[in-house]
Amino acid sequence: MISTIQLSNQVKETLNSYKKSPRQSYEEVILNLIKSVKIQKEERKELMIEGCKEMAEENLKITKEFEAMEDLSKWEWEGDL
Image (cartoon, rainbow, N blue to C red; front, side, top):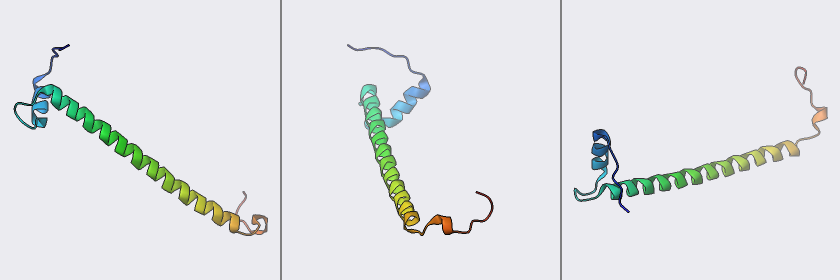
């Protein structure tokens, strides 16, 4: 099924700027844009996962450092806690 959609001149010009050749259809341009968005979304997801892993590793190091300290009840604390 083929549908006709209305586009403003600005959108049409923007889509034209993404064409790899003058003969490329708007459908191909839109599909390429969708593909690019999906790839970028996946890359962002992977970066966020990697960032969370790095933060978790750093938090684990800090936790281990605290666990390695002597009994905290022997420490002198400044102020009321």
